[in-house]
Image 1: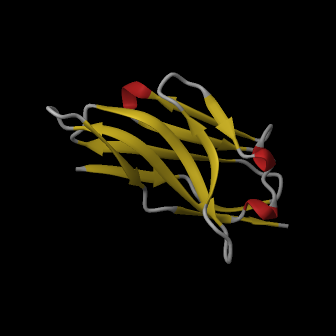
Image 2 (image 1 turned 60 degrees about the vertical axis):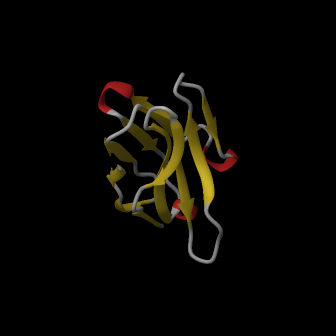
Image 3 (image 1 turned 45 degrees about the horizontal axis):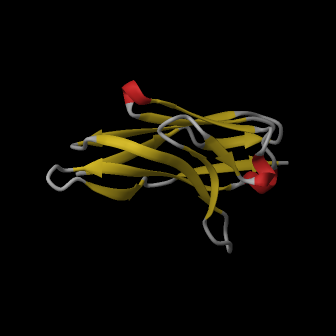
Length: 122
């Protein structure tokens, strides 16, 4: 019922910037928290940045000061502005969202995007 569509990944040099976008579509009441996760080869998926419906943000330590998460509630879209990219940022980046769906009862379900590759070369 809900689809998260990501865009913005690519191959860049160290020090460059990328902006990832994730738009939610489908049938739902509202979107609660949204976040970006990443999974590097041979590593577990980790949370990169999370933003609540009220705009409160939380970042993984290694990206603090370099990445900025934001959202446009009118567009049902979350962004991840990535600056000063490092080779260790190379990973598949996934969008995630807690979405309130249905009525009577209302239910919150978690959804994942398909992932987008970010590769940072030295």
